[in-house]
Image (cartoon, rainbow, N blue to C red):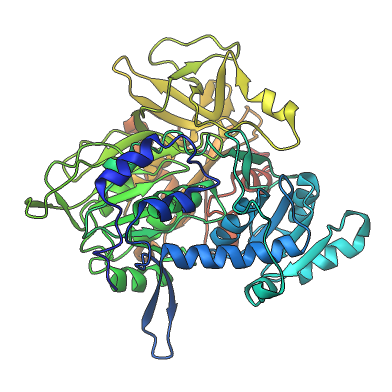
Length: 566
């Protein structure tokens, strides 16, 4: 693996920052034009051979363009035209990104769908989007669902293997290929979890999804020794965002097709990344039990986005790896000289973001030397024009008071596909509501307290689930490996309960033992006590959504009558 000849020269990166036509719909073509090393492999896929050893395969910019054009030829031959949405239902890894490139090169709109979504929910979602066709790893279950209601069936429902095997010489591409996007053209649709009802469909636009990422061209780590491991779901905006950055920088990147530790750790040891980007799901596993010392030996930075991570997991991960002296900026690292001295341990950059925000808009850096600061997500990044904590009327609240987190940024979504009413529901007084409850300090730091849907409405006032989880994970580590706190009804209003996964060495502990330990720690932190604890001993007891998030709505339903007799 040659990782010394693929990175874009600094002068070309500076030019990319100011390129007016560059956006999420054409970044591959701009990368090819800017990078003199366009034939050097830099995007890596992985597999395990018959001996159980990890095999990495590299792909260059020119390789990506060739596959993109072949796939685009298939889509064009099947009638896909500019502006039309197409469902892409594929497993994790490089494949959904290649289909994204192919469809945007035609001016079409890929509706990227995590293949772990329930199929009845998936069909409702694809019907809401109005896709003209669907490409899936296994379309048989979708076909069965459409047979129940053939009026909803799109024009084509094809296996991904058919696209991969297509002979591009049998058809051609449009004369204006690749398509030239206007700044406001929609380039992708990203769905929410869809645990109940039809998922929301967030629009990403050509220029909007590039806004805010420009500074990464010169300040994101891209030294000759740097390598990125992307554990993001690649049907999600987070995976697409890191892929865009890696392609424009020519940054050697392994695109993982499995986020679970058993698959991740052997690839880490083979690839030796200096950076790891993920949702919290993998960081929880890597921080549990014996730490991945060999795989993380060269890691200087962990990048988290989506839900903010917990200190109990972060503090273990930052003991791993090594970092150049002076890493101090969220998301962005000063350019380092190879001979610069290193420090033991790494930094964890916790970036609160979402598909609707377009990128992580807040950044908090934790190093081994950092003091604990529960639920702090840092200050807004430079793309944020304004961030505020608001009341229900859109009035900015005083420092220290909890309220709705609102942002003003060119990176925010244009809205939800086919749902202007839902879009309007997230706009208030000129702000976009992120769906989070937060508080702000006088020095400009923000603290993430909860998702608005997860606030526990007790008779004594609102109780926020995330600070409680923080204490359980950081202060009850001898018992609790992971947890989720939700509110359930009782005769005296809602009360918080916790569903916990136990540490392996605490497998014999019972729920009451955990509750007593948790409530002692919560009392010391000045937080509300738990009314009950339930132990999750099977994966079904701790349900995860398609992107690895705990399904709190499902837990609330499951335990709705737990406290009825109290």
